[in-house]
Length: 257
Image 1 (tube, rainbow, N blue to C red):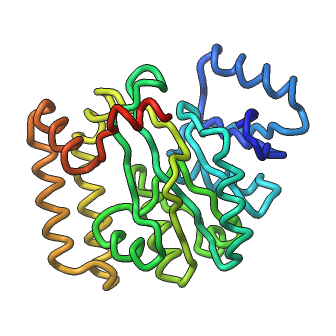
Image 2 (cartoon, rainbow, N blue to C red):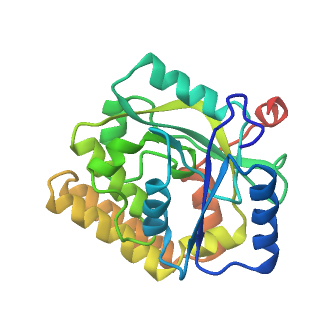
């Protein structure tokens, strides 16, 4: 984020519980080197991503907030591209984009998660799946807070928030450009196979069905697919994941990036 073409004037880091000494040393180094930029928010215990993000939002000085995970990499033009979209359309409240997933090294991009671009397509997509790549989003702080912030779900807190915002009439869009490089190794796929992930996927769509946002067919499709992912072998899940849920990078696109 320090190398952005449009540099942020504040970077908020939430320490969700105790960290290792090595991580604390890295944070202290940057905090001492850039005292006017870094705001550190320490939490006594791990409270989960949603509640941690809510605490971080309270400390953000600006209306536009770019969100990312600490182990991912934002492309240098990310903030500039997103701010330009907000300047072009002041009705926007959320701007996201594509993530490129890599193994081990950022140069080893193996797939992309492509999301719908226009607000109407985002709404339709959100009936079954998250229409935004959470690590890529930039949103208006006031819009998020007016909608109650992130919920308490540990794995679907972003999805539930975004649907809540869209249903309240807040407008979103996704750019067709890659904004973040995302670490996706075998452990990432293993986490997606956990029972809690399966249960929360079904629970969030059931919640949206009860609200009238998703249809009964959407609920059935998500419930069946989530259960199948939970029980299928890891090797088969890899094939499904890259065949149906991601767009595999061509060699030409890898070289271009």
